[in-house]
Image (cartoon, rainbow, N blue to C red; front, side, top):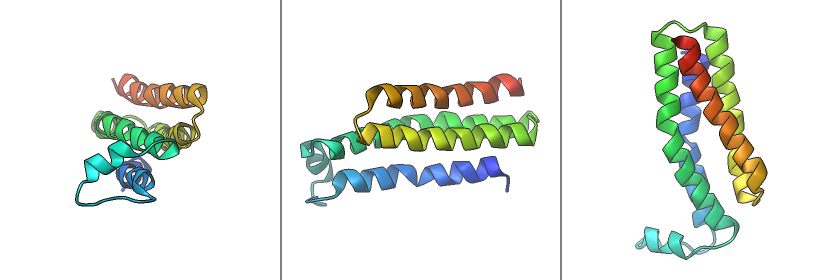
Length: 122
């Protein structure tokens, strides 16, 4: 399995980890959505980071698969995938820490990685 595919696997675990952070400190599993809706501060931001990761996982996974299928150089694909994972890690950390400008820069950087995979594979 390539590094890029391993990156896809790693990112599968980001939403549950972020969700766990959002639910830490008094979570009612019989009403999970109500419990998360009631959190505030950094836990709410962790929930928002989880939602954003869920929204961005599919385009990244598609880019990696398409990059492989169209023969993008493996080293390039791996580097872009690793950069995406690093940027998504920073995005989550910046989101939780309420560093909006840095969070947005990390988001745009991650999006640029996805676009670069598509464009370079074309």
